[in-house]
Length: 360
Length: 176
Image 1 (spheres, helix red, strand yellow):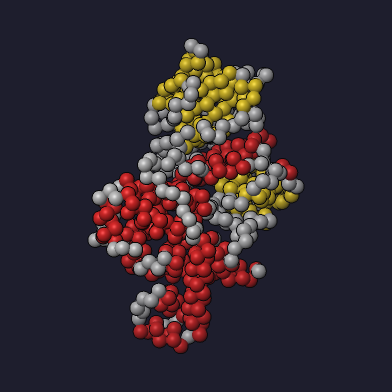
Image 2: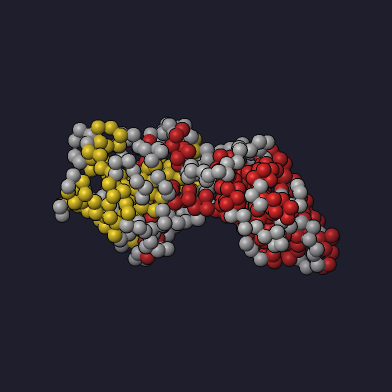
């Protein structure tokens, strides 16, 4: 028996399990396996020490009379104490949703094998070896040559901005701003210096972010920009049971386009969650599966939501089914806009984005 | 603690005080376990409350003949934690991705012991498994019930978790 064969039995031995005689004989004679056993035991000891510190002496009273309200989401908890600009945070949320929703679609798009033949670099970016998120960058359209994303941790968040500066031979020059921000830090990614990197699709580029581990970029050439306001096609087209998706919305009033948010998407989940967007010159539209005070009931059917405001029929057309049910509540507030300058986003009824009067 | 069957019998008879006693005896350790799954004390308290509330509202969920009440409690809590992460994932990213494994606290940020730092870097499933074994002392059979895996798989999963933790631990000790 070798050490490799025996190690699993070392683990079992730790647990007081019976192990084969051959394994026991090997471990008894092998210094390396005994060292592993010692380390396993040390790990157990340390975990129990940690546990003794972690167990609270008192627990909050148990309420059995009624179920608690919806649990506070991570971002809601952060929202209350957040001192970074809320616009930045709202943008970050929108970015996260848009980017994550596009991941599946990106996979099925055509890849271009020849070096430099595509006009889109389909990057995927992972923070500290975590889940990769897409970041497609166009070499021909400046409006689609940058991506922003944030990723929350307990102590703060990592934000990065990746900009395609120019197309080079067999690769691209990227401008990258990335940093870890502790909670309470009022800076944003725009306050960080931009560093330039040459990136050749097909390769992997690691950029160290102090306090958060590496930012790992990998990618390939593609022949066109993936459709970004898309939904999570990888799993299904169905919205979740408590989900309200507004994917790449277009708002029509009497068949005239009021606004087209092509490429922007938001997805509210959970009771009290609200999707909103602001239409300059018109006001704020909020959409929810819960009845908002003053809201009117709209009718959702697949990717189309119809509702009436001031006697006029409005139709919201999106790139994917909006909700599972047909009941969506719509609140239109004229001449008001989010105070944080966001134009589309997700909020919660208990943590509404502050409003201000719109003069446009 | 009194015998599981006796405790549960009182609870199923609607004895709220018995359930409160059960809560007070078990909640501190359960919250410590949950804190390592969901990442914060507040969230752990929320998930623990949800767990006990769900138990109270579905008193036919536990079958004493199948296993220990404590194993049932930790299994229920683990499932609540997974649901909690799914909700967070949906709220934050609007996707159906399982965020249990991809949201970890960077060890450089918070002051903790080297082993605890390494522990936090493990996937949630491995954290749960190691905690339940090393801290709670759950048997292989109980672990199988809690984690919904075959008993025969417990040994190999525990080994994998220990090796993963040891590997991270070694890396961190080198970097200190």
